[in-house]
Image 1 (cartoon, rainbow, N blue to C red):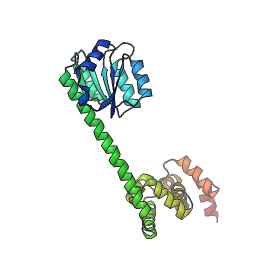
Image 2: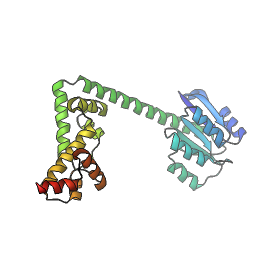
Image 3: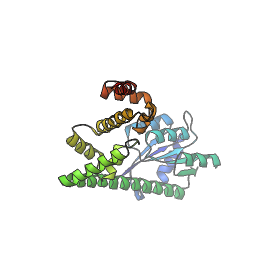
Image 4: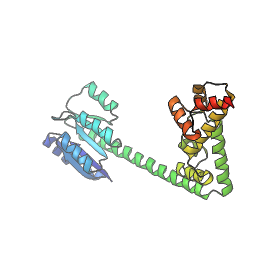
Length: 259
């Protein structure tokens, strides 16, 4: 079921919509009304609004201002404009704000019903997408939980190999999890169990170890070593290296050369 909010400073216009539309043909179980921007905002904060039908020309905050606010705070709400002016700029604004469209006042009941039906379909599609996404995550988690120790070990080897081969690049835990078809949460759990450290610490440790070897070879500048080991920020590289090795890369390189 869905909630519709009608916003218009003309009370008679609101009443006309309530009287003209055969609401029994739509799955709106609640129809709320407001006569101003501030009333509408309060209703949004107190209720889950699926569809907004809003007049553009209102004092103390226009319908455009309201839809901008809604799209920022409640992006899943479908919005429809009402306006007295057949102006191309309103059509442009409706497109820019990702509204379903705008209806000229006085609203033709047939056109209004078409837009209300379109809004219902859009909301239904979103609900279905969310539902299938949820099912997909559950299925993915189930697959990862059911994997044998051998399969889990193979997953970990794939991830570790990828990390080693792409250590100078940026990658996320989500990308690594997708690669082996398990959830990021489950991958983090497997990693912690095997290495007794987080994946972030594991990657950082590997990068510091590689930096140590490159500094010993003395073929690259320290900034080049930082880049080669996946540290995009020189000062951050220096800070992390000192945390793990007790001295800065420059100090480490100089002391190694003295030996």
